[in-house]
Image (cartoon, rainbow, N blue to C red; front, side, top):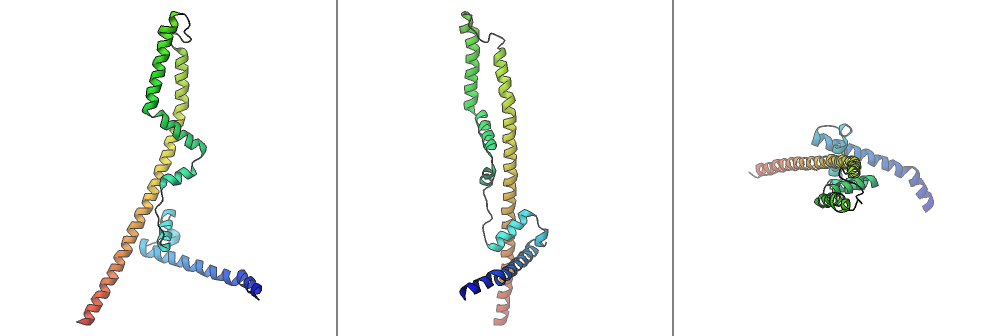
Length: 192
């Protein structure tokens, strides 16, 4: 008897109950969005839908944009960020300056005296190395900037959701306070 009941409920009755619950949830979301935003739920954009669902579920809507973007980042994205971080640091500038001056000093003074300079004065090999570094570093920095722009857009979207949620919650509280004020006035009028 128990197995028969489980099959019966599993096939139709609970499924119909689930559909009724989904329809009820949709009606609640539409009612909530009409009251708070003045538009039906199916006319809202994705951010507004997330906020309305969070309000209906009484769930927090705050998310960390950096964590969301880092979770989507591929290996190349993370590598570009690291290379750009190193290339834009004072440590890189100082180390690079030391290498450049050392290269020039070695090839112009020390090794040139013995005729062993591997890159004499016009420093053609040094120019080639610098050009190669610039050619590789520029697109990597651009990739990192594009990723930062995507993070900024995501952060703005999350900020919008949080601000919308706060505004809607304030509107709900305002409405509840108005209702309570009306009820208090009604009680006062009955008492007087």
